[in-house]
Image 1 (cartoon, rainbow, N blue to C red):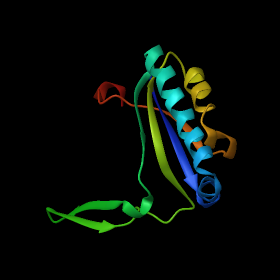
Image 2: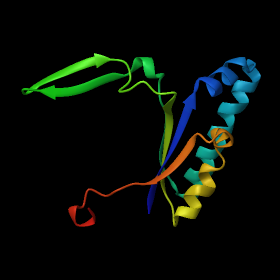
Image 3: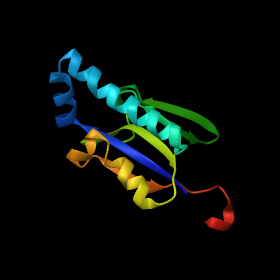
Length: 123
């Protein structure tokens, strides 16, 4: 079954990251590289990706058949999506176990959500 692990950031977690030394930031990124390697080796990793800062967001909508864009995130929020993991695991419990390895989980900034198939019978 596929699950998405959503990793969030907020002003507090961002400030903490910025206070880290270069070595500490390197260790943090190495932590994610180890998780990626473990999940790839077990066959559970479909994809993982860090996301750029919310200020780089382009919002897209269609009005009257025209595609319109605006800068910035969809909505003002104190938390923003910072990265994702798409997993193919045996159970929700396994997805939750993996999500618990994310440093942001200590701040309550990680979600696990089942991924839906595009098969209409499942909707």
